[in-house]
Image (cartoon, rainbow, N blue to C red; front, side, top):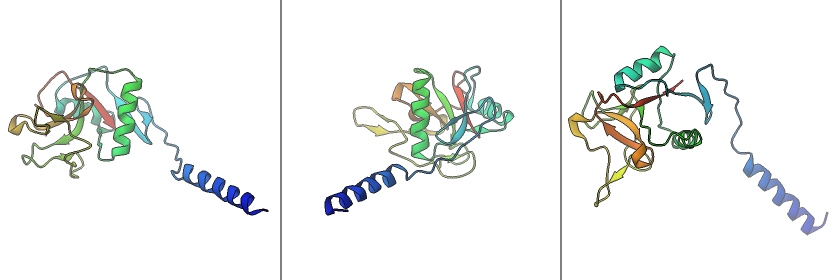
Length: 165
């Protein structure tokens, strides 16, 4: 094999190796859950309600309000919402600071990351959510802010759930 041929072969191997880094694992989801980004989710379009009611809805399905701690999964979920053409719909997610103000946690007790790339920016000073104080203790994907996290009043009845399992 010539020097050029060997270099070309090694280059091809490198490209193949780089495109196959992520292992493909098959996730099987039971109805009504659908595989999105390697996880099982259910976007509950038939019901909406308060954060606590929607959490119970997810638990009754054997899941929980979705945990979006993984930025890649978060991105995959947003693409899925866009594919379904669900614009202008807000979705509860499983993060809250009800127990301790300003200490946002997922329903499993793990800390919710603050700042970019999760929480929305707003206003002329480009301040970042959450900013609702003790009146807004539950997180949702805000359709008006390109599905970044926002904090809302947990009793708001017009929000759909996204369940994860």
